[in-house]
Length: 330
Image 1: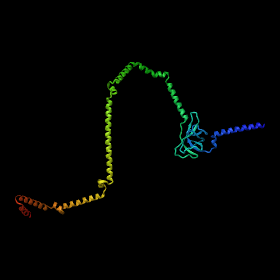
Image 2 (image 1 turned 180 degrees about the horizontal axis):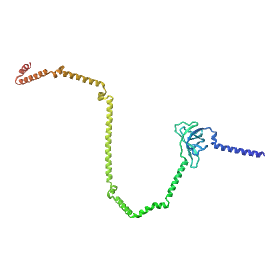
Image 3 (image 1 turned 45 degrees about the horizontal axis):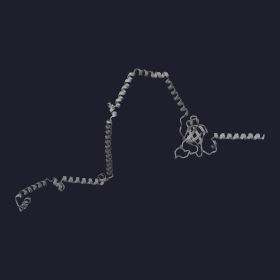
């Protein structure tokens, strides 16, 4: 009796241990007792994701789905991650599946290299994946359309489609034969180098001419490029000259920028204006020479006397010349 009771207790204890293992596995295995941290993500559709499904990074399991709840027209997924899982605060979460009939899981990418580690209860960004059911529905529609298309090519439909074409070929077989023969003759002439098209294909005259034209065009383009470079150099030099003038360098720059030279020039022009005004008014020696008519008459009279004196000197000696000049002038 005692042995029977101990046996029953042993079996009960073993079953209890097995049940505990099953419960722990459903809750995430022994990670239930490990200290980790939680992150959250909001999806529009979790696609049959369940609590306890794995969370992976690059295919490596790093945690489990801890909870799923509806909030603000979105699905909030809470994930329990291992303590050593390096998830960045800018990592993106997406729901994927291992196959067409496989298990769904949450995939986390690595995020940026310089980003910080996600804190406890951080909300990650998400990437929505195409709905598998929608894809299967579209594939079903495509398969249905293909099936309808194949049905349309039944025996009667093919006969209706090819019948007029067959009748046309029978009615015009002589014309088609003649056309094919003419095409053969034309192609034979082209191969033999006859006609314009044959010469264009078989002779290299056009090729040489085109090559010469291209060479001339390249030479012309090179000349244009050289002229453009010279014009560019000229513009650069002109820009340098303008810059030097604006900075007051050189003679032209000093003429443009030096106020002292401007003032001196203005003062000189003013003095010249005053001198000309005095001359016009008859002031000074030059003014009298220009404006005094009596002085002009005396100059003319003196020149006439000097002319007479020179005429009278032609027949006299040296001493007489001096006397005559003194007499004439004074």
